[in-house]
Image (tube, rainbow, N blue to C red; front, side):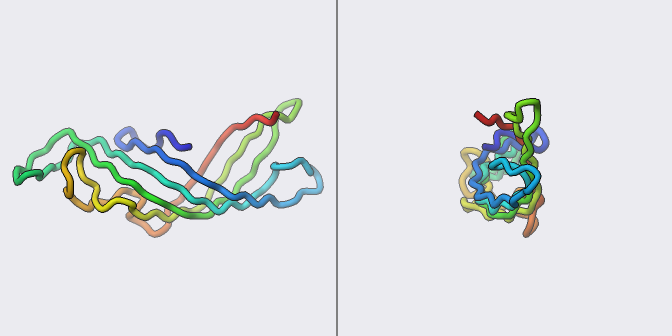
Length: 140
């Protein structure tokens, strides 16, 4: 689950689904540890809270509004999950990869202003976007 990222003007929420394929290790045969490859499907809602030019109802003016955009993405990540600590119950997981994003809605309209524009978020400006994840887990 993604709660917030990037600069303070972008508020991002989302979910991801990963299917991990772990590389077998002879030194550390514990389940769900080591290097992996993870095809990923993801969704993100990007809310850009900034002063934007609003041309609703024929009156252009700058207003402290914001744009909201729903995106769906797919990509491939490579990473490593490693147990740490004396009992090896805490897991550190880091991965990097590339994602491609497509809009799910038709416009990046300011709140309450339908059909404003088709301004792109930074996820849509490029075909492939770098993606990285870092997390902690606990093994029961």
